[in-house]
Length: 196
Image 1 (cartoon, rainbow, N blue to C red):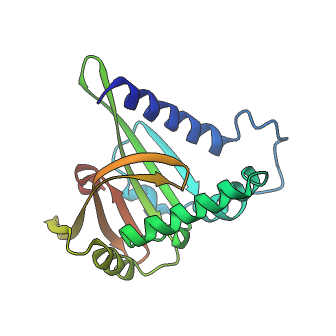
Image 2 (cartoon, helix red, strand yellow):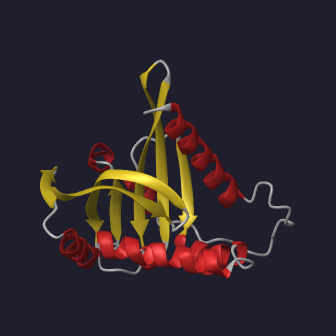
């Protein structure tokens, strides 16, 4: 991984953490809102992580993004189009997720390289098997199945750059998806989904 990708990854991670924590927003703290706790199962599925982020996806897509991009309707339209494009390419609709618990583990493949290993546990009001079927259909045969500890992991060959939440460009070679229960999915790299 070159330094540019490393810097971009670290910057993205800090930006996401700052975005979701409200750091530097200048907005007064809201004490009247009590967020609901994440489903206990989502955290139980998460493998050992150096950092954990809980993303309220519905709120992010329906309130936060429109608020942040309110002054730039073209950028909001582009972000929504990228989410739709991602759904078409992967069969996974981000809008069907309520929450994503994101676990990040730092690895050091060499002295000058830091790599972020991530896995997301997505929960929501969706049929996990239906999402799995849609992902298979969208892949057009560019996937394989792997059995691991009684579960089936679908591994999709993406090999392309995509926009995360329609805003940040990331390179995805393989994307692994595994149904954990009727309303939960593990999404990430193959080793991290195996660990979920």
